[in-house]
Length: 176
Image 1 (tube, rainbow, N blue to C red):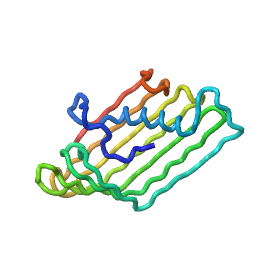
Image 2: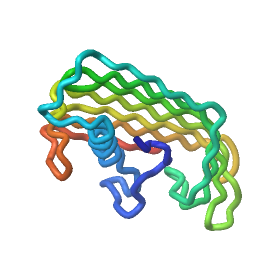
Image 3: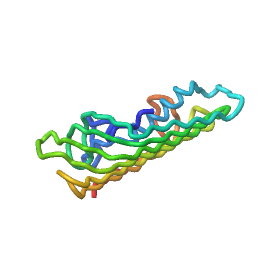
């Protein structure tokens, strides 16, 4: 699962003009998790198989949109943990990433620094249908956009097949 980018899709905007599309990220992450576990509706495993992966003081640099501020080259330093439990017919997964960022704004206005946290949880009982929830929060401490906060909450319930429409889905992003 790759939920490591502050913003995954900068080509589309929601109703509030933000490029954050967490629901697509959540659905893609759930589908990728199902694929990575090699699960289809008919897969059966003998017993629950838990796993935990952690990273400490990891660093990534990439170009993307700093939410509510603008396009930038962003460097993250973070800790993360992912727990996954697979069962005879499904899985449960949670992921948390928290850390700091330094974003050099493309417009030349300077470097913004701050903190962020991402959390996601996904479940499926049968490997075919599932649900997922995703949150993404951040705060700009210094530089351009200082004092800016953002929060995104997204959720879906429905089929995990690529291209399928969820039964329930919402994505609420706001800057404040």
